Length: 141
Image 1 (cartoon, rainbow, N blue to C red):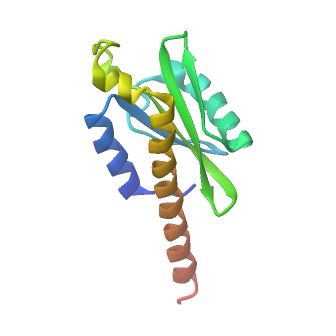
Image 2: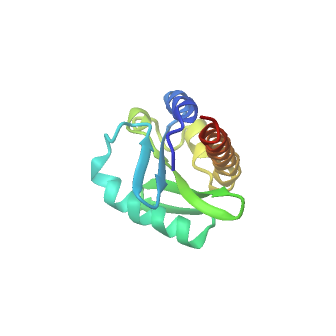
């Protein structure tokens, strides 16, 4: 998946506002991480989860050690799965209590599915636009 600087900037800003970190994966590996790889201990688990999300092409959620929720949504270009969007609990917000209304709502799987559906759609559209621009640019000398 090509670099999508505007989307990366958006996800970085969003990550600073909500208790989530975001990752974008493609078949070749990690493309983007809002936490700049700070959670290296979970990268192997996230990679395996990402592959599962891409292979099954549906929204999924898991938890690490039964505590840390992780959500995944395939990113599509038309009907083709080109990557996955992974959202997980942010270290910056780990001190929030589980009873905190914001945390409870953020980690609600149904709400997260709707949210990630929109974000993955945005990622797919951004990739498609970038792809079309590069194709047009190749046709000019």
